[in-house]
Image (cartoon, rainbow, N blue to C red):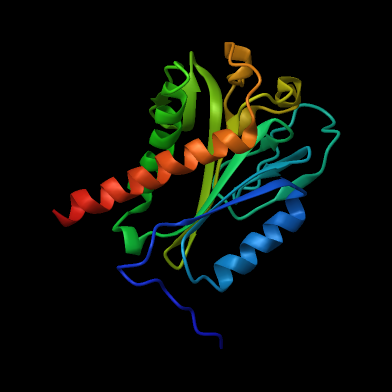
Length: 216
């Protein structure tokens, strides 16, 4: 049996990796392997080729022929779309190391998007009972995580400039609401790698704040 090495309390913050464009099934295997042999917190950013995924409930809420692969995963949530122009954030985090429960972690993930979009003068909100981040009742960021032996993985999808017609093929995350994007709100010519770095800095800053507040 392989020994799982956990980071010490004095470990540096999570590492950052920009992985570019990733085929989803291969990426999922990479993530599963990292979690199985977890050593340190990391945050991966990428975009996927067109794919629809569903969570542990296994609900296929598609409305039409999808025209892209459909992949069942271990995350929470229902069917959603990932594709070009959508920025994926996958933190792989030891929740105990950060003194976080699942509810607080989900809140922190959502808050990282809310603060990120504030820097672009976009006012977003949570919607009680519906995970993710919303802009004028339209979903701009989706959320689905899994916790395995205290390690949180999977993560969030932020719509920067995807083709929103792909979302018309499904009932996004089991709601009847539409999806929107930063581009649809007038924010043009964004580079995903640049936004990834901004998001990482906000996310890790919130992690550090949470740990400091709990230890004080």
